[in-house]
Length: 289
Image (cartoon, rainbow, N blue to C red):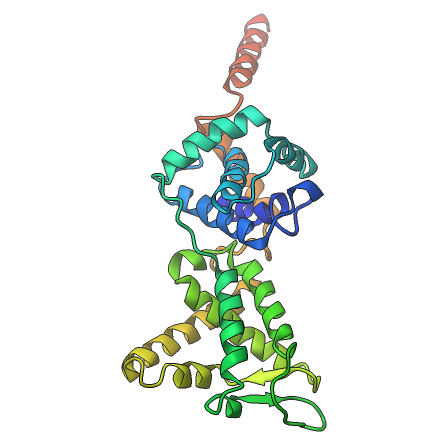
């Protein structure tokens, strides 16, 4: 639960929704930071490494990986804006431990890129003879026409918003970015198509997958992909219920406070000297009494 909570705060420190304007970067930076953060805690414990420091270190490292460098001072200011201050030196120290903790594996792929790639491919394919029948326009008039320049914009934008929930969940660790991007577009297509606005297009996404790869690969391979993407789509729909490690919804703060109290008793980091000082004061008071 602690990892889920801290991971959900990364987009508020770095990315397009960052609290501090100087920390606003592209969505792929936030995606990279979230995936690296979860990758780190797959084989490292919160008892040994402070999640707050590692959160800042993941954000700083992600800016380097995605070639969107940031002044570390801005990250320190960003953590203060989030009421969880992390000094610059602590971020630098945590970054070294972080890189070692992920075994120097910095290769990360973002679902945002695949959403854009699929959208561009759809725009081309739906204008072809094979793809014309897969496109329809919802609304009272039911007008059918050829795909225009911005017709796929609502689906693309909705898919990007879906990816905002996906990147803070466990799903990027379980599925390939291509599968995540395709599933996000499928769900976005359903949301936009049910809006009832005739200016919004609706695409037969399963028909697109089957037609697009017809003859290029085995039918069984295409069936396996569609089955896997359908399963993934159902998982993404359940993210709003707080499932699969998505911390953007249904966060129980009482549970987190209880976990944090237990963590204070067994963690290897934190102000240990202060704890010992308090214990000594209590012993002195008990002896004096």
